[in-house]
Length: 88
Image (cartoon, rainbow, N blue to C red; front, side, top):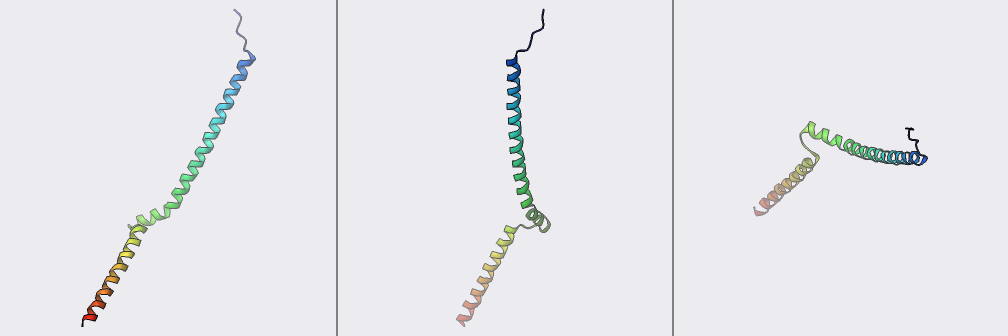
């Protein structure tokens, strides 16, 4: 028996398949790196806030809430002082 000869059509179709696979892999790698970059930027942006929260044990939201509540409390005290002095 004679060995089978490769037909030129078959070789060309394999080349096309490799080009398609390589193209899809390159597109996937590029989009994956873009997503990784975005995730790292987000993490790097939030890192200082998280470090401050760990070191102080209090977050910025809690600080602003406490500041607002202290302001309200001081206004209540001022209004009580004013109402008490008006009655005498």
